[in-house]
Amino acid sequence: MRMIPPALQTHLDGSVTTTALLLQVTLESGEHYGITSHDQPITYDGLTYRIGFDPSVIASASDLSVDNGEARALLTALINQNQLLNGHLDNAHWKLYLINWQQPDNDNALLLDAGDIGEVKIKDDSEYRAELLSYAMRLKQNLGTSWSRTCRATFGTPAKGQNGCGASAPFTSGTVIAVDSSDPFRVFQGTINTAAYSIGRVVWTGGDNKGSRAHKIEAANPSTVALFEAMRFPIKIGDTFNIRKDCNKSPADCIQYKNFVNYKGEPFIPTGDGLESMTPSAQVFGGLSGSSIQP
Image (cartoon, rainbow, N blue to C red; front, side, top):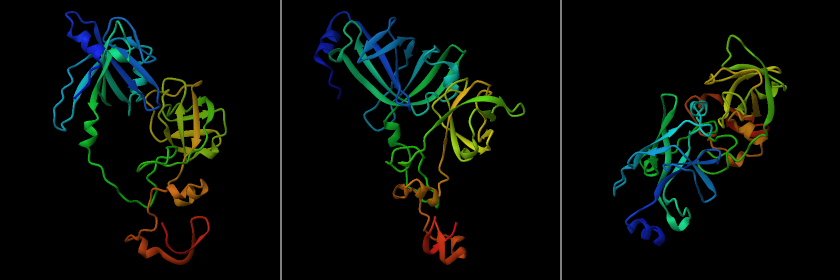
């Protein structure tokens, strides 16, 4: 049951209302932006909500079925087509408020629902539609713990949850000075020595591929980087990027980062293949001795 603030309830009970909807979107990076169904920008709780938002009906039920809806919004400088194609709204969250736009404060605002951004579609190069999934969706997902010899953690994330790591490496900034004409979506040369980043990640900070996603490196030498996946747009000279080392998911690498306590793998569990490779008194994992199963 929602508790409506008294001031807003009094306004809703009146014969004329001045209400609007506010959609707050929180990106995976922690950045916030807002859009509103009103015909003028509204500033609420320190965030300015821009015009250009048209919500659908959000269906909800008293059981654990998933609340769902859809938001239509115009492509603007705030959210443009390139950003959406680069996954700008991946893993984003949303909150939907009803507010009295004449008095946009906490006494005149009601949180209607919140959840995750689902599928995003671009229509006619002028607007996009984002699926609004309630947090109840998470309760319908099948989650379980698996085991693996290598680490399942995501390098660079806080040490919490099943995939938290607790270790990271610093980023180094660079600029693209050459692009492989035979593979302009993956292979480029930068202004820095990239030999140490054969296992690493690249985040584009400038250019058509700019975004928060860290792209996996397939191979690197002192002058050239080849990405594992092709970018959405061709890489161009002058594009800027951040690059860092990554972890190879092995216990030895985890020990080098002094983070083995957070290792999310089970390297000592016997397996069918592993039993054939047991080596008594072998040196493993950077000097730990004893009977062990070799990878």
